[in-house]
Image 1 (cartoon, rainbow, N blue to C red):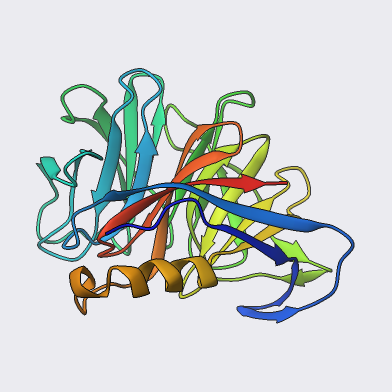
Image 2 (cartoon, helix red, strand yellow):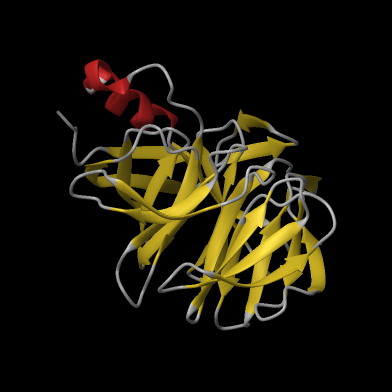
Length: 264
């Protein structure tokens, strides 16, 4: 049985590298669980997007020989694979731009441009370094790309050329392990690898404006569905914007998707 409608209030956190130390602040962020849906516990989630055109949830997975992209049905939890990557590629983040999708690879230095309807590859572009997360800012017409460091790169949404970069910081200290990304509310939302926290980044200066700790919420949900959980559940890694402060969240080999409000 899935738990619903938890409200977890958390204070902002001081971030030094990948470490988080709790600190007192005047305002609190709030994570509100609206609904819980089933998901494919075998899916090693690397990218997560909600199409504004079709209202379908697009999920991309990683691992060599198992990387794919397809659709996730929230009612059944079924992941329908639409395309697989060749065995030499480890799939990473995705983002939707107009009528196509960009899909990253981890260490292979190649991005795939796919048709949004057919998922067929329509172009390939090379890049330097690793690829982790990807998000599209339609207003500025730019993509944001993470590579596991504290630096986010700006990429052209049409041909993937690099436009610039910013360093993500909290109180002047760099924050590393930036992973899956989503752009919403004029902020860049990011998973921190091996953390139950999501941060919201100012895209102008790279400063972190909000920190959301989902640790207690995830633990409560896991305890409630312990019989269905299994032992393969990995890290939080999937942010798909719905509207306003509402998001779908999931992770690698997560058996569920959370619909939440990340209030500011």
